[in-house]
Image (cartoon, rainbow, N blue to C red; front, side):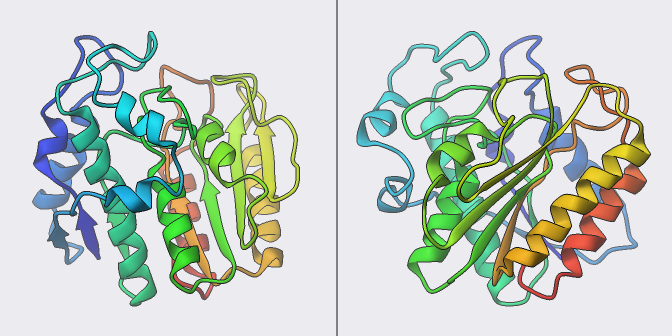
Length: 260
């Protein structure tokens, strides 16, 4: 298993903000302390501008370098565009390794799935997974699936990938919740909503339905947008998942028989 990470992604923060360096430094510390799983570590290269611009406008790319906050949740930080480019580079490396049959996990910040073509929002600046999906499409993959199990809808990924041939987006998320999107499925975007406080057993049924639809799509590559905030007790939403539920996601997706 290869862990794609870079300690530089812990260098920025806003006091009291939930998107904080511990999101990466905590798991890295635990992974380095364990001995049961053999790990390799990889630092990503920044995503090239040309690959980023498949997903985002030039205006958005330039805006990331302007020293003004994007919204109340999404602050400007010195060098944030460089951080976001490395995070997108991690997603690109993850796809490269997956295609080579090498299991991997990209553990970087900032996250990306709320960033739309034209806007940074929801702690996200560049749509890392969408950038990786479009790179995969441009380099030979015929049917790419993005599977997002973050508790919040990946509105940015959907915005970038909607109505594109050869790519499908599957999202399981709580509704109502930020950002308020993802209530309907359309074209190549499949949305599966879970009400607040849903029992684990019912959440699993929704997840099983999403996975069944994913299998029916028949992808030759699956890119996973893995959020763990549906965990019981997470302060930003109201789901009840346990570590076993996330283990199920991992085993189920790894068992699809295609690069993940």
